[in-house]
Length: 426
Length: 108
Image (cartoon, rainbow over the protein chains, first blue to last red):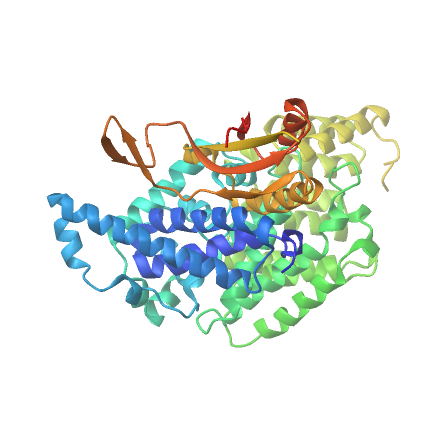
């Protein structure tokens, strides 16, 4: 028996996800709400018992058996009610198997199956991420709302929508065959990717990186890579890309919580365990002839990692990769990043020329990053008033606290160094 | 030394349930509370299973009592010098509880 503090980090949260998945297999995707209530009740029982008696030898097994018994109790109660209520009789007659036989003792790939079920084409994409965070990662509505920068009511609505769709579809958990899983793999990957980018980018009010979201994305992807359905190059490439980004997380955040620009990042703070894991995935991803956006993004992230100094960064290669990325998955953001690489390669004016040539109609208007880059390039050319105008626009559009703080600092630089004086950063 | 019954009530509102992450933190905090006050906590405290039955005016009804905003979730027996000392122990309980502190009369 050991103390509750001996539990691994996020044990309750991760077990919640596993329990919901295992229970859903037994109770049916229609009964997700019951599965969640039972998982919650099993954790509540652990909370009552473990501080008094210590952690059982096999805490996951203890939770599973507790949840299993709670589910059987709940199922029996429902059967009793069903007998009393004629409206429910049909349902009761349909489910005649003894409750015990409905619970598998083996815990297998249920979490992964639930992830695929949640990515059913009839579940709206914005619901899929919230649904995965709730059922598989065990976050509360309030925690998801903080992570996705949405209101609790909005998150609740997204989860409910997914539950309603899944209830109506009445999917047979075990009937998901390999071809269906393969067909839905793209959707699953984009949920994981979205989870990671939500965690990675400064969308949060105060914290530039939501590591818990990034960690969950990597956990789900590793789970996927362990399964025959997910042991494919695209999954390995996605893992590589996430690991290379994670390697630079410590260096990206200043002690005061602010954003640190790539050129100023302390390379000794890069996490080489993450980078090495990324290299291993990257090597595995280089099989076959499929080139996904994850492959290209992993290569870009690796280029940012591998140079020993900022000056050694291979901007020519990065510019090429952004071109390739734009062909695989067209987006004006890639052009923007391409322009940044170009400015390091051939100077700020080359970057601005590129942006002027590819400017799409509506993206610059609502994307603060666009104006932030334009401001940076003008600033480097010594055109402080142009820089100031662009940064003011970026500040107007930006909602993230760390980004806003960064832009305010740059605007102060504009005032300190009037037009055509030396750039303090060069 | 006087003995006290701590009656812990939880909200029936699902929105106020702690998240799994919070529950893990609570397990650690409860363990620490029990260690700190091990000399004051008497054997006999326990949690209560949900459900149960209510007899009122000879009529039986099944619990839990869905109309209620709170239900009794667990209880502890505590020995302390006086009500203030017992209250101090209750104040250190982790989590967002409603705790009723009652002194045992000693009739039995």
